[in-house]
Image (cartoon, rainbow, N blue to C red):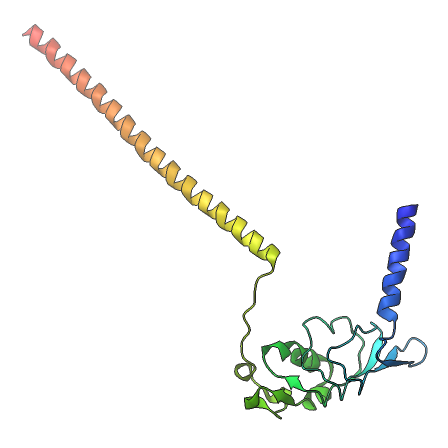
Length: 200
């Protein structure tokens, strides 16, 4: 019972967190079951705050946002309007997540985003940038993936060594069998020759 109660309290806490208005923003209900309008504009924000899952309108314009971490906006499944202009966006490979997210959510919002850095793409619309202009990021494997990689590598090495040993053992056993058979045939031939010599 205590475990169930603890689980229920944790679940309630999580739901409260996901439905809560970010402290740096102002929120307004859009009517019954129509979600929230989250206004975080002109707050000097340097990162996107944790947003309620029922966000319908999101205003993040005129802040100090330079990028959005991958996955930060994935929970916003019912967004209908987004404003992200007038932010100093860094248009390198890290901005690709935001670009792809806006392509699915709001083409208008994407069209209004202009790059601040790096210099070659300054003031260019994010929508117009190609993969080459955004650059490439080296993806480092998570620790767990690296652990699996090394385990797989060790298993492969063991399998190769085992295969080599089995192949060598088979080759050696064939050689031994061949030598035994050769001796047997030689001994038999010698006995036959001796028997034939005695008869003569």
